[in-house]
Image (cartoon, rainbow, N blue to C red; front, side):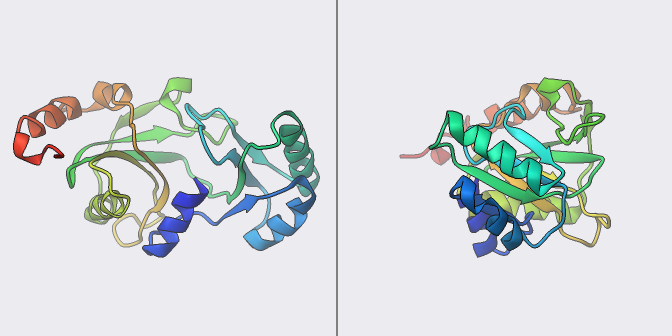
Length: 201
């Protein structure tokens, strides 16, 4: 996830400020580099699926304790801290071969910061703005993804202000978006790959 953050910076993709934690003794220094206020997000830099491994942290004292405890059990686990951006929902956009085939809004769960459908978050189809659509396609292209799930945090002015890219999923699950979409994303993807000329050699 930290490498993805650096890639976003490289390609001028708007994304929450992120810092990598190297050691429990450098937590305070790392937080200062983030240049934001609490609360912040603490998460594993790899392997967080269905929202497990994502924690909102309210103070430096709590952050230090959480990092120390986590690294006590797995000293090699890569951790990152991230700017917290308050939202009511996020957006999952499925991009296939440079085309948006589906998008859904996922409501943030009550008293939580996560919006994973598999954890009980409510979702429904959403119509993207032109800016969100073109930015999702650009993000997928910059990440080299042929079939990806781009997770966006919507801006306050969705028509004119770029969304934040939270992450890019190389193996997006389609069950949730399939259930809420008026046109089947899975069918669109299968129809696309009937054309063998676009298969990788």
